[in-house]
Length: 328
Picture 1 (cartoon, rainbow, N blue to C red):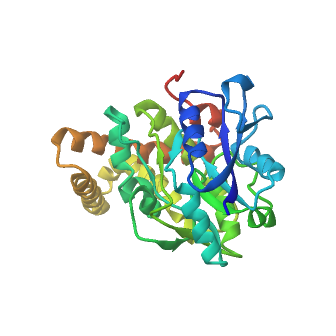
Picture 2: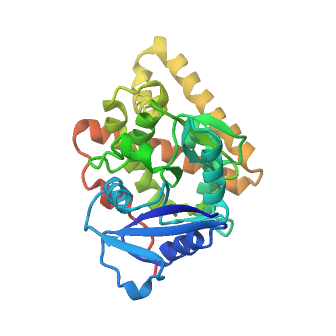
């Protein structure tokens, strides 16, 4: 007997990436799939497969899109995936099997790997995500790692019990970025989250400029991350801000002779750490240079976003976050 699962895909509109995502979800093995596509913009139903249920509530947060779709779905299991991702054909089956074997688990997640066909800066960004300097303690999600219990899962790759999602009142629809962090912080108070390497998806990396905008937008989420008092699990989201401020202050330390040498040594040590981390990712000299650029810019843009949020200057976050190269 096949299990039933509702897959929810939030999106701005319909483009070729979204169609790829939908196709991958329709091709799931041994699972009866229902898909909810929830968009900002109106999409003509003739462009969608018959098995896709289409919803549009206008310009609302991704968290609210998921909440509304979950309330409409009838299945015991639900799955979240991003519109620029594609699932392997046993993604849902493997996730549900794990949920069925352990009643203490509410959410199953797995690796979200770069598409193999990506080139240029998108390929470099995919490599950079495999470093803890970019992905922090969640770096295991960017690699094929062993099965572990974890404290957080990304909403680009979640398979879970609908009842536990509803029990914690779903996602905070006031949060635009970090809604998955908020959900997981609530879930782990009642049940467990597990990462499994067989619950795998592919996630398309952005190009250079859209990636920098994305990191800036991520940086503005620190207010929501720490507003709930969950500190240990989320400390990594503050680190780019401290590094950013540390580098800004460095030139001024020249006037404090006592501290300048220590400060300079710490900056040099950080630079060496970045170099060796990028060398682990690639032995190609050009790629190493590009990886260094991406890692530094990702940290600084994240930290700058946090600073702008604290100063009250972070505006039009959604516009910055969704900025992408145009797709047909």
